[in-house]
Each structure stands twice: as C-alpha cells, then as structure tokens.
Amino acid sequence: MSSEPIVLQLAPLPRTQIGPFLLLGVEKDASREAIEAAWAEKIKQARRGQIKTPLEDINWAREMLTSRESRIRCDAVGLNVDTTDGTLKKLKEHYQGKGQVEIRCKPIDTEKWLADYTPQVPVPSVDEIRQLVKLPEIPREVPAVRVMLESFVQEPIDPWQVELDA
Image (cartoon, rainbow, N blue to C red; front, side, top):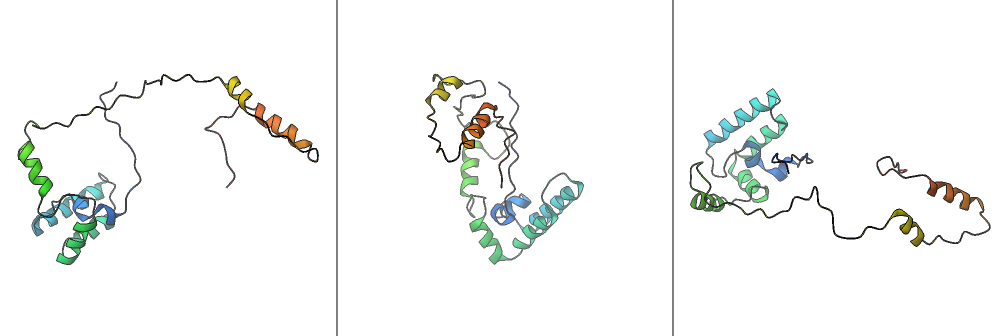
C-alpha cells in the first residue's frame, strides 16, 4: 500500500459556488488589509502560473469582499461552511489548539485499501454467461440479420475502443 496521496483532477467549480473567501484564502472576518494582501499574492501566483485560478476570478473575489452587501451574500452561498462568527474555527482551536503543534484530536480513518481487494463471490466464466443468454427469434423476412448478429457477437469487444454513434 502506497503512502503517497492520490491526486484527483476535478472539474472546476464556478467562482460563485467556491466563493471569494476560499478563492482568496481569507477568513470570513478578514480585514480590508488582509483581503488586499491576499488578493495581491493570488495575482502574483496566477501570473507566475503557480495556481490555475483565472485572474478575472481573483479580481471578482476582491470586488465581492469590498462591499458589505455582496460580502454577506457570498458568505451565505459559498462553499466555506464556517459561519461568520467562526464557530468551526473556535471548535478547531478548542480541540486542536491555536498553534500548528501536535494534533490532539485525530480523525479515525477506517477505510479499507481496495486496490488488491477481490470479492468472495464466484464469477461465472464467459461461456457460462453466453449459455444463459437467450437469443430472440429472428423473423424470416430479414434473413441477413442472423448472419450480421452472429458476426458481430464473434468479435471480442474491447471496452476502451467502443465507439458509439452520436
């Protein structure tokens, strides 16, 4: 079992769903100066190609956090689940402490490694499955259908090479 983390490439979410707080990496109670500093840093990172966030999204996040109305609206609909008063942050500080020291409360991960897992279920052979398939009766009006179906069934199907008509 590898200790390397698995990196997933996910489809990007729209900026309105992510929210300006997560885009800029600031807390919900961040000051104007903290927002400006985070915005400037994200702009630098985006121009250097260190992050994939578009410049327009970074600028949008800054705009959304400048007015009180839009900030409250973004607070309500963004993915950042912590409340404005920082309930989750307070709980984290209570159980883990404020510093980056040892974690007091560690999550229990009980997932099994499934890469080498084989279920204890008998798997039928291909021949057994073919015997179970009941072929429909083909009408005499279209005799070529039987030949076409038989030739199609004889070819092995590679699931990675199947092309479907759009």
